[in-house]
Image (cartoon, rainbow, N blue to C red; front, side):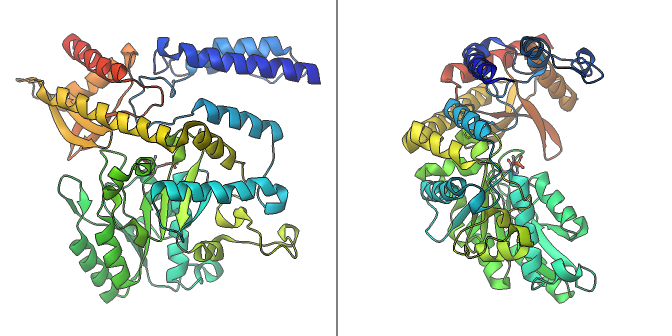
Length: 469
Ligand SMILES: *Cc1c(COP(=O)(O)O)cnc(C)c1O
């Protein structure tokens, strides 16, 4: 590509992005593509000779865009949001244009130093005490894996990395059933084994793990000669927002000398609003905390903030220093590749810097507060309808409900059909989950561009689709 073409097509891409965002509300939220439909339109063999950019761009619009589900759509109410604020998109364009690999301080000092500063901005924004140090991981799953490896190595006095796990007692980690599947995978990958992830029973409307049951499970494991290593509580579980009592969990952890990693991947963003911080009261006692600015806050995917009370135990677990990576005489600098599992690192701090400066914390807080209050309004409307049932109350902006007209016996089937009908309709997008064995419909409000009208309109769509069944 010549420099003039680069300029021309970069501008075209920027125009395309702006047009896309402006007209997004007119598209069906979930792609209507059938399995295999996109692949069938793409050449089976790669071209030997260069093609015109016009043709490539035209194929993108014709073939790829209809196969996209629109996560930035104002009526996206499924899963959790993956907000990419426009200012963050601009930062990502600049990062991609520079194309730096920021594994070490010297491979881009600005990337490392900005990361240190903006993670401290986020620490302050969440109300975490000084002394927590942050690092950006690619995903909450990676942060959790790093934390599980750290708890393993800490329990083994760093012998696992050297000699493997055989010859040691079984390492035990504790969590409720409300935690994300990334916890299970971290347990598999770290060699701890799923039998050693001990599920603590939950109770109450918050579906919080029972701290006294946790205490006795740990004691039983110690008595049996096992090696308890850590606890993974969650704040805002993925299914219906299950939230553990962090203070109670940390008290048990302190008693037994265990490491605590808090998964607040989604709900953590809301902690920029002081009035929601009671959901993680006691957080200052945790060892490790993850939340995803790439979910609710608006830093485009991927961007996961990982806070550590003592980064040394993480670095001791993950740092490898082959000769070619040593930056001699620069020991006072941070090399963030020693804090994470992949060696290579994207420059992710720029989008956080742009985002917070362009919106201000007040701007981001008011977005989150609006989402929470609109979600509560909708939940009340659903609860008031005689043929709908509110199954779980809003945790921040997430609640679940089901359609339960009298006389229907198979409500699971009815609700699955309702979700499918709603998503085929395309005006809104939402997903289902299971609560105590029942299939229910999840609803979360969190998209950057969502308005109160969009949320209330969702009720009409749900009602229409239910009537059509
Ligand atoms: C989304 C989510 C995760 C996984 O986040 P990734 O960044 O996609 O790995 C983990 N835990 C919770 C509670 C989540 O909501």
